[in-house]
Length: 593
Ligand SMILES: *[C@@H]1O[C@H](CO)[C@@H](O)[C@H](O)[C@H]1NC(C)=O
Ligand SMILES: *[C@@H]1O[C@H](CO)[C@@H](O)[C@H](O)[C@H]1NC(C)=O
Ligand SMILES: *[C@@H]1O[C@H](CO)[C@@H](O)[C@H](O)[C@H]1NC(C)=O
Ligand SMILES: *[C@@H]1O[C@H](CO)[C@@H](O)[C@H](O)[C@H]1NC(C)=O
View 1: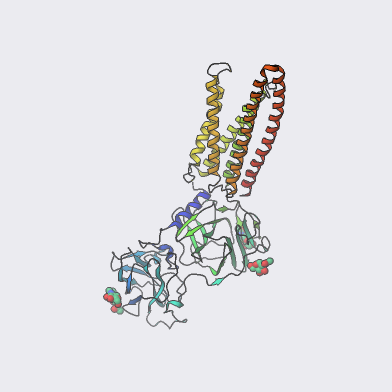
View 2: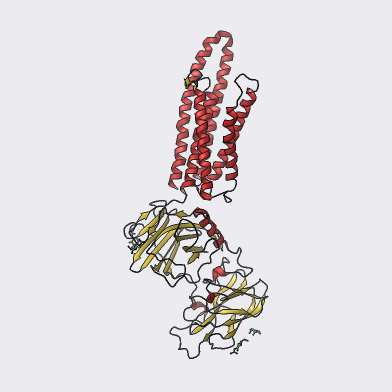
């Protein structure tokens, strides 16, 4: 079973990870549309390379010799496109002349007509020219132009160098002038720029909005914002959020990944490109070479990435685009984009239900964290911040204080201790199963957290079992038991704190940074501080009693103890208040996610 968050995250990773460090082996399908290598620099103008062919006319099925030549170059990428629509997908297919120098690639959809629709290098070895053959397809446009991207050195490259044009016999002259110089060939970068941040004024009213955190202001750098506004037969989509990497949303029939319609705005070196992709199960999807999106605009300002585009409600001609007049779960994800190394850093947001974005406008929030994981975190916080800590303090310091009070036939401190500890074990056990239910098994992506969690769980089960078989108070082995009981408990608590530290920053929960770390450090300091205070107090009491020994043992013992009791009870009350403040802070943070 594929699970929602994980799967989407994994997809984000696989699909966008792609080749590292440019494409030394030439497998560059992701750039089918833009023909732009992700080498972290801008393309050169004035190309030095030329593309020649051995004829000017072609008929379907003809074989045309294509020769790319010029000064020594390392990489190349050749496509043939409709000369009148250079942004349209590649046409025809190629045959290699030299398999050592070149390889065939499939661009865009895996439809037959697109296979082998591009050629690229096989290695960075320097070459002066490459020869390939182009086979004209049956449904070729009237005029076909060859385009090439050439990489001379890693940072020195030309994109979409316009090459020779071949035409069908008797084709009418083109209706628009054809592009023969580099400057006139548009890359897929949008031409329009937004001038101000999006606003939420029409949300729930004239447009359907998703905001994370709920009701945040899209102008702020920490707000993820997605809106859909229907205008006749098209929908205007606006998406913005913290802008270092990419933002993406997907329409899905279920809360699991696979078969989803995805839209991505990627910040590529201060240029934003907008693409679509169809997500097929777990196989790494390829960004579509043509994206059916209109009026694409973007803006990068004040740490916010904004992009907007329009698409028709029905896009039947494009495989993988869903109709917008139906209900879907909506995913919203973000991550880093460096070259092609995109890595999601947070759990994607998934709407809790299915929404019809062209229906009644709504203004919804969403959670980035699955309910089961939130419950897991909340229960663990209750158990290992509150119940266990109070239970330990009671056993350690309140034996003498409550030794004469009884509850259900046992000493009060013992009853309180046992009740709190069993509550801890119970909460831990319930909470422990939840991530397994959510993941459907072991989570491989959670680092040390699950291993430490299992250790804590084992100790938490072992501790009451051992306590059940404790020797009687005056048995000789009682000291040994006390020592074991204390060290097992202490180990469990230390491990639990470490596990919580690791768990709070995992993508599935990810409490706000660095707030969570400081708050957890604050809690540990608070707990240790109170513990030390009570230890010092106990030590002083004993000293006092011993000093007063010779004078009046009985009297001093009672008065010192009475004094000590009051102090301890006040400290306990203060401790519990502080402890609950920390607990509430963490629970509120979980609720906010
Ligand atoms: C171009 O070269 C191909 C392959 O060598 C050949 O089949 C074709 O006839 C040539 N076309 C012209 C116009 O010479
Ligand atoms: C390709 O063009 C270059 C430069 O014009 C030329 O030297 C080379 O021989 C050509 N190769 C083929 C196979 O036509
Ligand atoms: C909100 O944005 C829309 C365009 O997206 C604009 O027409 C409108 O004036 C803006 N409203 C405010 C209050 O800025
Ligand atoms: C979504 O809303 C549109 C417009 O109101 C409506 O035509 C369509 O039937 C709705 N779809 C569903 C699945 O409710």
